[in-house]
Length: 104
Length: 388
Image (cartoon, rainbow over all chains, first blue to last red; front, side):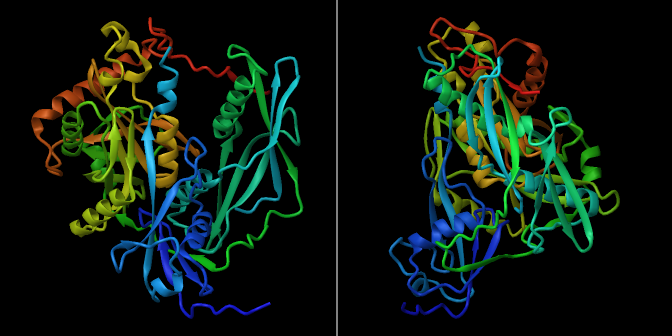
């Protein structure tokens, strides 16, 4: 079993409202953003799915650079100590279910 | 959440035949948030990030006894102060029961008109502390990330008046009329498509009375959305823009809720006017998608969702919020002449008048109509009743 290097220092992750903030640490250097996001969603007790059971699409926005991190990026290469990442979903409001009960 | 129990939902016909039995994976977060707010209201403690993990205890059914529950209790503690909040089984698990019954209807195991009963049972398990070994990093919750400001909320309440559907268990939410007027303007300008925005303000604790409440200070229109007549998608860019707007104001405001428009006049334009007037779609409601959005983005127990409906009756508003872990219609305090926001005053009378009209219409049988196009206002789901 091979050893994996770990990021020396941590960073913060918050939800959109900024009211839930986690400190992240001990991040192996080979963790990608696409692996990071579902882990954080669970840790922050955010829902994984929408009302129809489809997975919610969360983006990780790196405030320092004002951009969304790409799924294939390694977290250790993109994120610096003290950075803040914000988890921002694409999420629907609507009435598809109600509409379906309102049609012949 | 620590619990040493596993929860199971059973659905039975009235004659006792078992139709459904499945382990629940409940979303305890709204209950935890409600308990968190209870700590602030009763002890002045905001326990988030304290390291104390909430603990859940089943409340056994008085008549049926263990393992049937009639509710559950969430315990929290901090600094040697402990408190708890109780939650009733029926409302908290109703959505899960409806979803299960809809599946039974789809599978034709029950008819839409059938009546069924449901119950939730709890069974002790060794431990719920299963470690998620797929997560290869450590996290810890940061304390104090929900700033509560000292503000004379009691005075604000005394300077405002009741709107909507007040309930004594709710904290006060004060909304300035200018903010509502601004929302009204956005709603009118949106026409036939859905639109929305974010309510920002402060979670307040009165320094003298210790009352807790929310003061809405402004609304931020949602930009970069994808919208049509029946859907409104808040994109990642929407949240970026909202966060930037809040930061620019430099007032340390929180996102305390959201609002969105239901353009019912567009949805129901093919129906006769008299049917539109009593159609369920013309009343303020939260769709399953709306509820899911609120849970995802606004799980805090003090967060609210304002639905503005544009129907043949004009604009109507209805506020929803968390109560005992469940989203319910609620009241708010409308404060006149607050001088907040940039909404046009001329828009306001319509909104306020319609709000009053809505209250007067509450006794109308608007949820029991069927129009010529099959626009049923009755749920296709069989009635659900508590088992006991």
